[in-house]
Amino acid sequence: MTDAEFLSDVANHGLKILRDDGLYRHLRFKQPDTSCMYFDLITWPGHLCYTGDMGTYVFQRVEDMLGFFRRDCSDALPINPGYWSEKVQAADGGRHPGCVFEYDHDRFLAVVNEYLSDWLEGLDEEAASDLREAVDDDVLQWSDANDEHGNYKRAYEFSAEVGGHTYQFTDFFERNFRRFTHRYLWCCRALVWGIDQYDKLKAGAEVAA
Image (cartoon, rainbow, N blue to C red):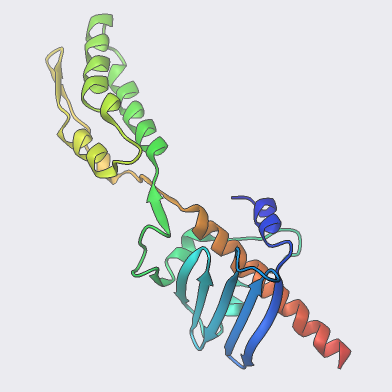
């Protein structure tokens, strides 16, 4: 998810202000004659709700949440998905469900191989081969990008006795195997971009008046 990809998605979006009463706002962003990639931003004191094709997210932090997400530069769409995720009060049915985070299988494999690399240091060729085979047979070859809990279970249960030493994935689950979803990152950019469009429209209206 890049700024360019997002901007391509919203290239034909227009803004319709459905309500603009102090901190009570309802802003709609969509293409004419289609609801593809549309989204609404709804605010009330202390809250902002994003809802649309990429899901629904309710954020809570300050009295006017437009100010919380408003960017202070014009050259990019600066986002802070980690910090902002801490302000999510609800998202598609619960706090921090799969629409915000998802399992990162590549990260899981990288950490398994990181442990293995550390274990192999100082082992002779035979012991190293045995340990590689054990990890491959019991963990790696059974790993499945669509079976997060099964992968964790196999790593948790792994134990290999090689060269008089027992190898286990100690402290394995203190590592992070999550990443932000594409649609949450899209939403973060939509917040910054949408508020910018609203500010520009308001500034234009004031000048015209």
